[in-house]
Image 1 (spheres, rainbow, N blue to C red):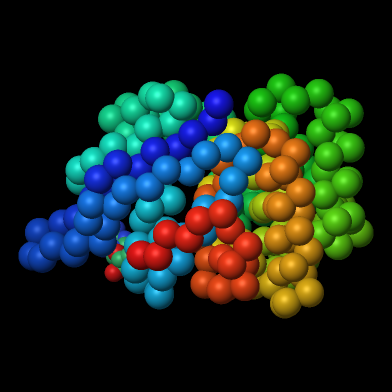
Image 2 (tube, helix red, strand yellow; image 1 turned 180 degrees about the vertical axis):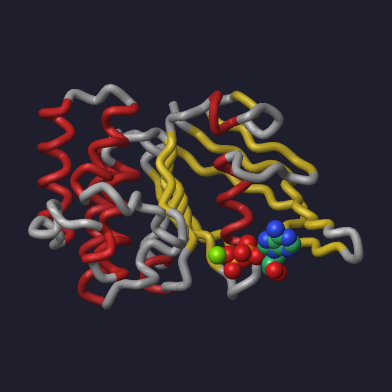
Length: 212
Ligand SMILES: Nc1ncnc2c1ncn2[C@@H]1O[C@H](COP(=O)(O)OP(=O)(O)O)[C@@H](O)[C@H]1O
Ligand SMILES: [Mg+2]
């Protein structure tokens, strides 16, 4: 059963002249089919925490344990590929259409194309970007790109989904549609969902709130 354990995690950025302590002894557990909201003002360490969990960055101390395996002292990104990440900035590939950007993630995981397309069209319709799939990222608004990045992250049903301010560029209506989709997935899939968000209404729907 999927479970993420964050144990006594700390992160100190050291740029030579001075040190910034961002996380200091953070501990929490997130179980499958549950949503954990990471809240806190700008600069409180939300993105840092997601970068540590995904293996993009290394903690100064403590442990990150997923399904009973310590993942922070190996190259988690390569050893543990079963997660989806929505970055604060979308990182869609500019030379691919929205559909190609999303399906490339499915190909990496060898998800059958037919099944991936069905999921893609279903999610795109729910999030209101089904008429944008043949377009390129530059032709979309910030909010549309953000929704495309969310679909790319969840297309493979990863067991760990990390999202950094996924509703940051969305109006309230689209924010609620995205929240509804995530809530549906959370009940259908046995995944752990971790979402950094400023949006207190969104955080209020989470199973637990970690305030940094
Ligand atoms: N690579 C880095 N080097 C030094 N300080 C950093 C680095 N990345 C982030 N920080 C600092 O860590 C703190 C937390 O940043 P961040 O995790 O981006 O916060 P949030 O996502 O909550 O806005 C900030 O004070 C930021 O300046
Ligand atoms: Mg951030």
